[in-house]
Length: 400
Image 1 (cartoon, rainbow, N blue to C red):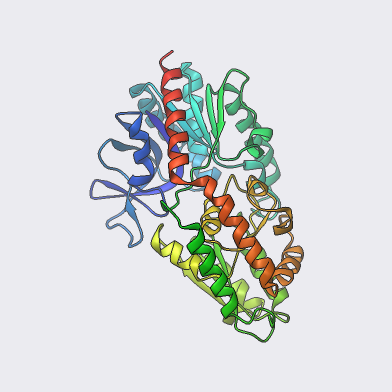
Image 2 (image 1 turned 90 degrees about the vertical axis):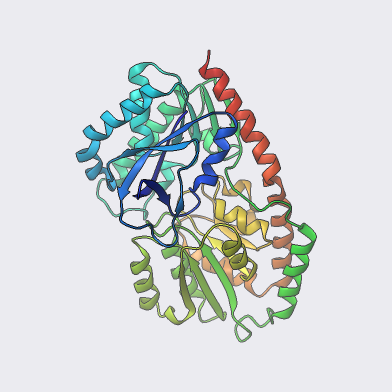
């Protein structure tokens, strides 16, 4: 089976490494339906793996390495060589499950259409929101936005099977063909057997131990954020601006997890806004215990994204009983109550909601209980069962 991924990978001593959650474990589920999986992706040679990188290839999982490029202009320069490599990968396999949107997936799709091969999709994001105002300063952003959304509609309309990470949001904007097998389930990975009662009790103890009713003069409210800083689509700049607006009214500590090319800019922005002494940039944390320990020690989780499919970080925070505030993009309204949502690109409305909930321990506890109950729908057992059924259907339809 061939799949595609727009994430960057590194090649070291004949092995492939990755940051984030795209390690060997994340691909291993494919092997329940297929003997071998080939991942078409950009790979950059490196002498040594970075300290937070994990092995991505392994038994049954191999990579078809494309030239390393960043952005549309480098893509155009590398396109011819990448097309030749992609064509070889497509010719070697008989089942194709692309992760869209992305330029790598689009390249594989063009080759599949050219050769008349059927394909299936995992739809994990929305390019219309990803290229919304504020996400990218380029003058051609509006044109790329229209083109990317139009292209994803075309890709979805020709697939014979589609899984969307949302229940309805992405389906409405990028509908499948009438004849396609279409489902909707998340690709989030949670710990098995989270104890709902234990987490809720721990959250209640945390709320009682903090002087929340004196939000201005009490102990700092610990506000958490997890998101890539490779761009601004997760809204880190919006959160910093909102926090600065709250700084006269509440005592807070803002903890930001994530790494990328915008990290230096976000540090500079925190200084410019006069809140650098209240903000800690923690870099990237490994999936699993480090992330869950972080979430267990924040009082409010905020994700003011400009675009999303169904955000993994938000579901992880909900699964730990975190009260959460997020924006009304992608599948987020499928997760949170309307009162816990703010419009995208509005730091003013985000600041108002932070102030509204920060000193209300009863509201924070109610948010915590709701989020724990909702996150139970994303148990590993349920998601693994849905994933297996989808992969078997992809396999069946590819054999027709």
